[in-house]
Length: 391
Image 1 (spheres, rainbow, N blue to C red):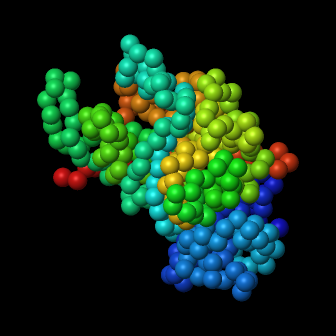
Image 2: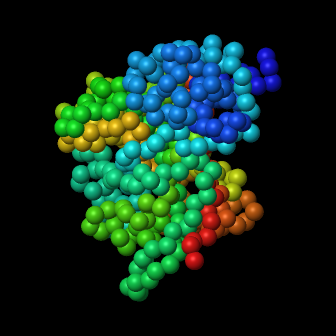
Image 3: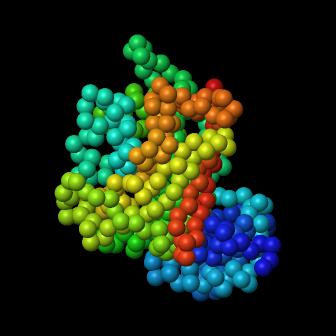
């Protein structure tokens, strides 16, 4: 074993092998695969058969190549990482691993949606009538998706005060949303829906997502058309894309359905979600552990609904799950829920309290999933520090 080899309990061993894009020591951009705490360049070391897929230094060409090619490339990785040069990750600046096409954000956690409903509509049913009939979502802004480590500037915007006064300035209720993202590879033709059974033919892999949210801006603007400037200023994603092929052992049954689904969403023949355990840290302190296995809507259902009207897919499209929240208070995936709308401040170990984020705060999301033979596979991290609003 060399110094760069992973230990038996390393979450980034040979069963994982996620892909990313990094600035190589020669100053050029390379597609890399992670093994332990080091990386191997596929741009430099891939066999001639696959060289064009990695020549540009991003995953774009690999995503477009389709599942048979994804499977063949993954099959050569174990031998490649044994022979190719490895570079420590500590010396590699990571970049956004693919060009984001369209970005869609869903609202797939029943626990999160119910908590938000209780907060904002205490005299009504927590869930809107449509919620268990279709995966609710909205189209976001692909151009402000940024890689982990990118600072997040506090947004300015319009807000409405408790007295009805309309003001403008920095958001005072800046929040996080811990999510799982699905990275589309193979595209689809305009007018052609993608059925549940074809999910794995179109989705290359997953990444972690932090959908930063300015709750006060969002609250004033979202009626009647939904999220806009309160969401579009930044969405952070992990630098590593974990292929679906690495997550076979993480498949779990889909949740029980208590409302009959229309045929295109009926997943009884394809009933699997993913067991991904997320951890949320604020300034280094663990504040939440949201479980993705509890999500009501699966990735396959999100994709099927997103395309049922004939909307086409492109390589690099990204769709995210919406906030991951479980049934317990310590499993809530947003500060909005953890502080119960600001009424129950979070107390940190140093006796600081938070309801929403302050300038200088750093949020780090990490996650792992079951792998073969009882191992755990890491999904990387999403790190972001809040900087002051533009003056």
